[in-house]
Length: 132
Image 1 (spheres, rainbow, N blue to C red):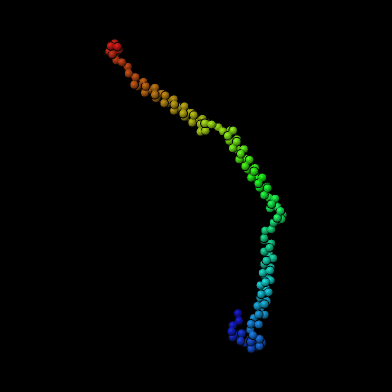
Image 2 (cartoon, rainbow, N blue to C red):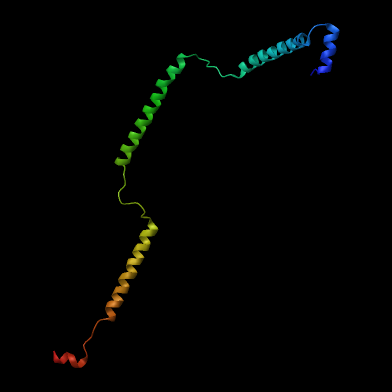
């Protein structure tokens, strides 16, 4: 930066106003700035993604994706049909272990029912049998 007292000394020495002297220094700085800016623009172009096949390929890609969606729709339809065709009815959750437990439980219930039935059988007394 140029201070005011330095500016006065320059005008005395050269006779030209200091704004012209500063312009000559600024012009080199401005040219350097634009040169740096141009260099930066050139380098940044290397990192920009460009389409390699041109504009027509973007249109050609759409039918391929529509074919994929059609294939997915067909697959869903086939899966639905096969689910209906090979559907198992009522066999879910019946493992061999569960079946054995159910059989043992029903056997235990039956034995207990027989025992309870025997407990409440009323046998007539010896004297009552003759009255009938």
